[in-house]
Amino acid sequence: MDVAQRNYCFVILLLLFTGILVLIVNLRKGYSARDIGKIKLPLEIGAWKGREIDYDKKAFQVLGADVTIFREYSRYGNGEVTLYLAYYQDMSKADLSHSLEICYPGQGWQIVKQETQLLYLDNGESILVNRMIVQKHREKQLVIYWFQSREGAFARRGAQKFSLILDRLRGRRNDSVFVIVSSFIVDDNVKEVWNTERGFTQELFPLLADIFVND
Image (cartoon, rainbow, N blue to C red):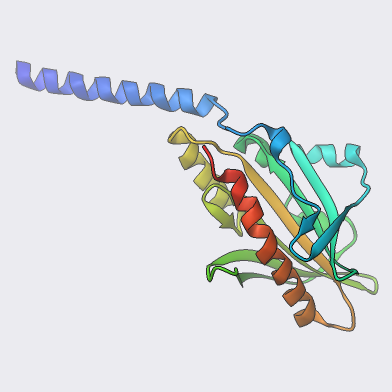
């Protein structure tokens, strides 16, 4: 190997070493440019008016969220949708968000139907959400949920995590939210309930997207 080849190999090794150092530093940093105290959601979203739902905060600690929002939103005075939102400041904590395929059966609900569904937003774009019909005794619910971060909404936690890893490697923030919207089904009015949840999500989604606007 002549001198030119040795110098070339040295430069390549130096670049690789530098890249590895940058990668390690980025992986150790928690990128979240926003104070978690600012993660808020209005009680009034368009025509929807919300109220806080009392819940056992100790029981929810296992989910490890930095901010938890648990509310019922109604439109024109009728109780229509329940919203659960968990905000995670760092991707490592987001792994604590539970899979609903395990969570609901663990609480005695049977999953009657499960699928992914495109939900169209007011701006013409669409997001892919998970959609489940669950039943406990005579009660039925239509549940939709998704994972949201800087890059948008994801139906699968794995796809969102891959996106968060890429953001972390680029030195970007890697906070996220886990969102569940649910409503009771009465007299098999699944289509009506879906339209209600879709209408609420169309109002909600831009507010959640605003969380990730600034680096």
